[in-house]
Structures are given as C-alpha cells and as structure tokens.
Length: 107
Image (cartoon, rainbow, N blue to C red; front, side):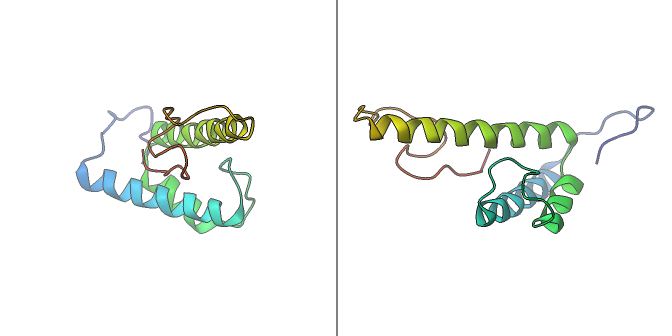
C-alpha cells in the first residue's frame, strides 16, 4: 500500500483501515502463539500473517503498531515486576486494558 515517490499519498478509507486492523490482529495473535514479542523475531513462523499485515497497512502504521506492541510488552513486564515487589499498582494503567490483564493489540 506504500505509494511510490512520484505518487500523491493516498489515505486508507474505513474499509482499508478495517482490513489493516484485522490483518494486524491476526499477525499479533500468531506472534502471541509463538511467544514472540517483537515483530520479526518469530522467523518464518508467521510469514503468511506478516505478509497480509504488511500488504494491508501503510508503512507508517506498521511501524507505529510494531513499536507500540514492543513498548506495551515492556510496560506490562514493568507492571508485573512492581506487583511482585508489593507496589500498589491498582490505579495504574500502562495500556488500553486493565493492568491485571494481558494487553490487547488493538490500537
């Protein structure tokens, strides 16, 4: 979906956004099933899903979603460390979901 340098950039319409998000969710589900946090670290295990994700989303969105996934995983790990130390984290939110649950990959 990336335009060439000579083209005017086009912005995804509602249907294209839905397709992008669905492809992202499928790819991230595959990563989760393989225990991979950082996109690309799964090797060839999620190749079909990765190709669909990269073919359905503009490059800037792919970069944003991937960075956000890694950042949220780090924050989730920090939250769990704080909980293990006995720090009250009941009022904290490190992401879109309740801090005691796994984060959603939804953006």
